Image 1 (spheres, rainbow, N blue to C red):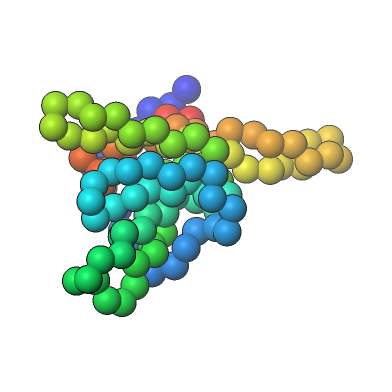
Image 2 (cartoon, rainbow, N blue to C red):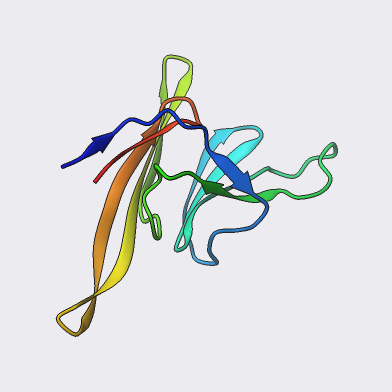
Length: 116
């Protein structure tokens, strides 16, 4: 097992990571996370003051590659702990098989750590 604790801040791009939404988790009034078949994303719930883009992909080298079949958010000491797993399809002995790509977590909704 390898553990990396790189203190990098995530970036986001105005796009949606994948059409298959696996899980939705409330983080705050202005952010709902989505685990999708193409990666982790979030959207800003609509309200009167928002105009423009509301759907985003989270881009961080410390997020697991592939889809995100598991997403969990915990409230800890007035903060959020977010945990997400990754999965991708590989060719194994001539057949397609799902394989895990790691688990990432964040205690401040932005700096991600990963374990393979």
